[in-house]
Image (cartoon, rainbow, N blue to C red):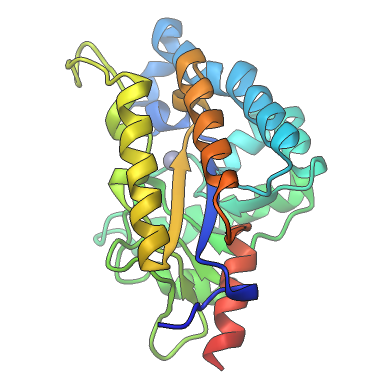
Length: 268
Ligand SMILES: [Zn+2]
């Protein structure tokens, strides 16, 4: 099969970071705001995770996409501006990381619009793409994406290549749980009490996913969270993975927006 990527690249790699900070906890239970022990796990993403990730990306000279909920942009304007000013793409990720449900379309539309307004008001950013909190879509989500004039969605899990949603010009950039840091590393003694994986083990999983995608010629769309991947051993692992990928020939590192735009031109 001929390469679908620019310059006949063998694979496209998008490094994406969902900068959720504590919004994931708060959207599940607003009362957690009075539990600093729990909240601090999210604060870590802003205080330590984001600067560490930016440092690695800069040193390795790679593009990346950060999906940020509007509430996080408002609470952490300096960290969000750092991401923008370093030239990384910023995408839409809800307002307070609310998980949309099919029984509340108005609530979903409101949160979608509120997140957009926050990105514009604080950062002057009009995002080109949407990643739903927890990748959970409803029958109206793609309509919101379309109405706000976006180019892509990065939420569904049914392919290893991008595709255009039928009847629209919205490109889907598929994701996979296997390429997300959260299922391996998240820990909560009350809810998710299980041993955490070692970074070493997940290095093996992600490297092999990359090698498979290199062979298949698809999209390696990695999703990390500053509050999850931003810890010592995991940051070393992420850098090691990045360096491994950079050593291979024909790897196209791009932002989600670039991949989506490329896919649209070749679909026309
Ligand atoms: Zn998220």
